[in-house]
Length: 262
Image (spheres, rainbow, N blue to C red):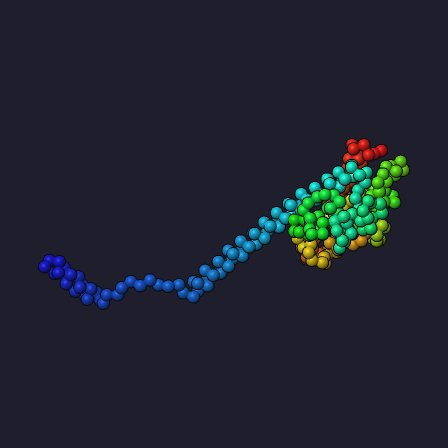
């Protein structure tokens, strides 16, 4: 009876205080849902940007290692064969052109002859490729009647003094001449005596270059451009090429050490 009495009292108390209303959970409003979706979109977008940046950094690092390996392979080839290999011609295979060296068919606008050098990684044609999977370009000096790509040619030119002449500038602005006469503007030379230049066309290498500095690296002449990356809004346009070159003194030292010079 005591329990029933207490329940009646509780019921009466509820009636005095108003009708009993059970607690209800409130749902999300449209505004709250919109805010959540915006936050999720920002987080996903940030993750995608971060992932893309990480991939580019990894590709850049891989390409730097590849360029260094190619330079070493070229120097090793010179020590063994008494010459540098010719570049591989475009739209063919990764074999130097012509096979056996001499006067190269594409001294300034060819590719690394990975088959001739016996290096990897390569694409299906046998061209050495960079971290983005694009063929790596390779140019070699044609000075002294192509002495550096002719067996014993450098040795023959040694008494009169070889004059390798590939140029690398820090800008394409002011480049003069064409072919074997092209030259950097005064004060923009990074080197004027390279024996070989090796170029990765970077992240945008699968597209036709539009910036003046990148266009200089695919022109058929002895002059190239190298500097830090630049956006499309830069004065000379977008630039993300990665460029390395071989000093004649490094080549001579390697060949002297191998007994190929003088």
